[in-house]
Image (cartoon, rainbow, N blue to C red; front, side, top):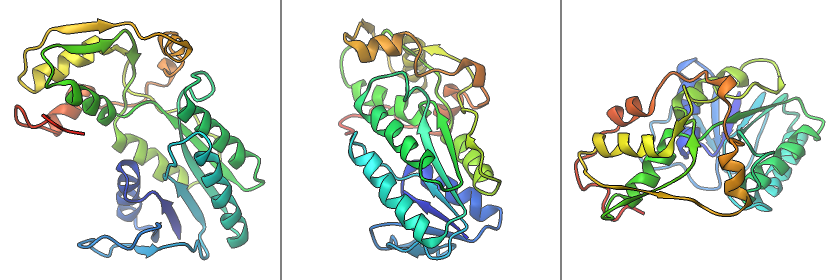
Length: 251
């Protein structure tokens, strides 16, 4: 049996789909009851890892301190249950970009790597969904502000495929990173978003200050040598069409 934490999130849902499709016995670990309307294709647990053979940890605590604490609790539960394999999804650049959230992910990696449990850690670049949401939030403005950064977005489904593969395999320690098809300037991605949503907006270049954004400009969050994803930002937008104006007021 494979347990998935964060099974109601963007990535967790996809990982569950992949595992169920492969015929795996899946249990979702959540602090909340099973959602109404869920089809019952997998078990739902609120706290117990039971006799899990593996755990895919997709849940996140967001804060720098909360993320390693969550990992510590999971490690203790996995150790008590005798879990054979702990899989953790992290982010490319957590050791190079001094963003507090990244620092929390890096600390969680260290908790898992030092736990004594068999483990696999997979780092991925930003999802297409993140950039689409950021551009959508700015879309109602008369100009679209665009940071002077590059991104290498990857499809969440491709990351889920890799996590499912790793979860059903042998512990790999630090697995090779997963990144999108190519590195692209934010202004290029913003222009793609505008075309796909039928908008005309001037792009406003913005140079963001501070050491976090210096690290981003230096490419700390990129992995050009791991461009294994095949789904482009254009592909993603085509698969997630939205009528003109539908992003107005989105939070």
